[in-house]
Image (cartoon, rainbow, N blue to C red; front, side):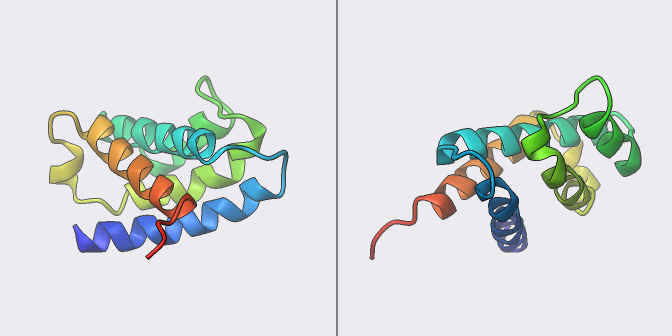
Length: 114
């Protein structure tokens, strides 16, 4: 779980940069959209799609994300393909992993004061 949290932290930091260069979004909007990408990638991987296919579908295919998020697809998909297959195959994995990503993303976007 710690490894997953560290990876999510790194991904969220990388994702924030391209998103901040465009029209402002709320943290909730950005985190919701990226967590949807994660959940879709988990679902497609669980059904046997390759990373290349998932990336193509999310950037050019029937599930194409908005232009603002195109640059975030490949790193997110690559990360999803590092998750243990047993976790990906578990019941509710897309919602669970997407939800964890969303929570971590929001915590990074709205750091609590110490």
